Image 1 (spheres, rainbow, N blue to C red):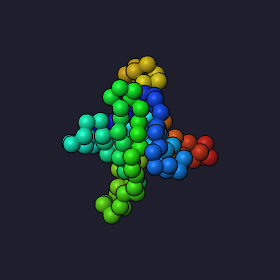
Image 2 (image 1 turned 135 degrees about the vertical axis):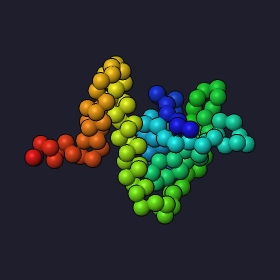
Image 3 (image 1 turned 135 degrees about the horizontal axis):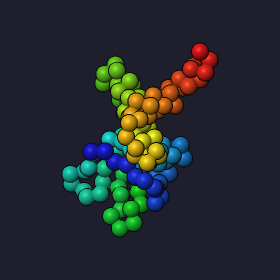
Length: 129
């Protein structure tokens, strides 16, 4: 499942993880990421980005996020895992651009290229070329 929030009602950091970790979680929640619901606990999820997993709870009453645990993922999957993650981030950013334009169709390629430029810093390469 894909989990994305339009706004954050707040993150409770019960284990006092570093601020950078909490910011990484907040960014992931706003951009969206792969999430797996805990089959035994309603409102609990494993949420992950390219290098870290978060175990969180989302309150059904307040919508507040509780960061319960986090750990770095092992990087032994596929050699192209980094390119897959970049492609996923480009796709998400392109969709954001589409939404910002009022969901008008006909600009998919432009959105993709703009997102790719933003995320790979190719904009600076185009300006130099």
